[in-house]
Image (cartoon, rainbow, N blue to C red; front, top):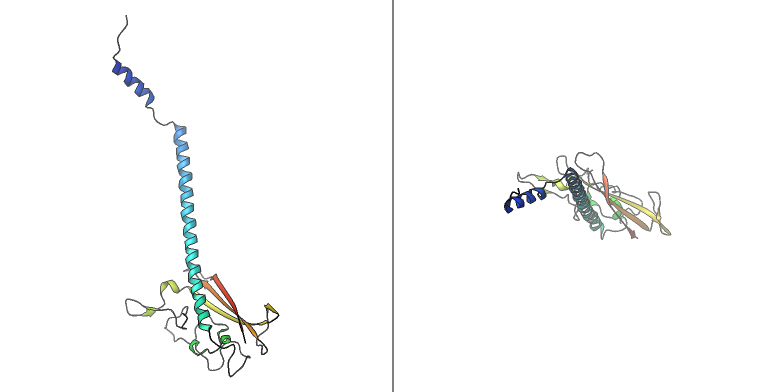
Length: 206
């Protein structure tokens, strides 16, 4: 004797047999693929962040180096009265504002300023030889946080006119060409070491 099965029951059985869930293997493969994609995305974001920070530091360092170059622009080769003997400030030139020739800047370090009174802000300088500062909401003049860990260093060397890569000993009274080197470095907060960022060099003739 044959029993008649309603057509709707047949459809439900077919749907139940085909509407199965993911297998364990499929779930594992999906998890691995998603995990690899997320890891790659995290690495990409991290790399872009590092490159962005490095680019910002390079831009800042270049600006600070150019500040020094502008400070020295137009200054004479050597002191008009003391000639070419002295490297660094001459007698009586106890402040940055008093430097009147290029070799006065030899040994300049923006983080070590004996000409600035104790308690006054010390930091990198602008093209007008002034420490970069601002007045905070409390009315106190200070070096902005983003500038506190930057350093400008200047070295002035007499060089051989026939081989500009060779520096003469100091002092040197017969020099006709000097090489100015500006080194900009950054010290991350809490780190004792300075990281070099930009080095700018140029020559000046008598």
